[in-house]
Image (cartoon, rainbow, N blue to C red; front, side, top):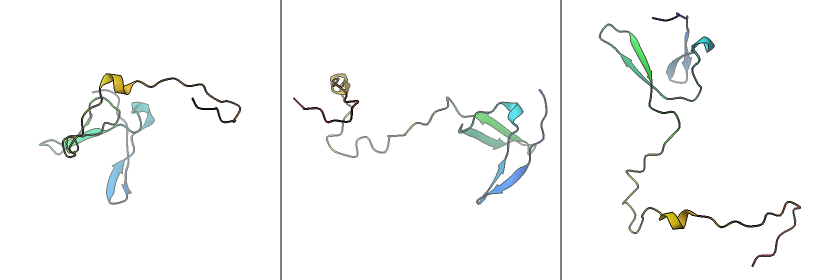
Length: 91
């Protein structure tokens, strides 16, 4: 086992949280899997690659005609930007 730190639990809403010491180098806003083993010890593991993902399994197919975009529908055409704040004439 590596270096040990002392952490304190505190009440946060209806939950109890543990503030992790900065020396552990834990990134903020990361999801963790927390479990308790047979001895009663807490096990904490990072959950997959960080970054939030949206689960669309319940949405896809629920609306008739809803289908993924084709690659040609994803490309955007460039346009001239007006940095002066005046409106540009549209073609």
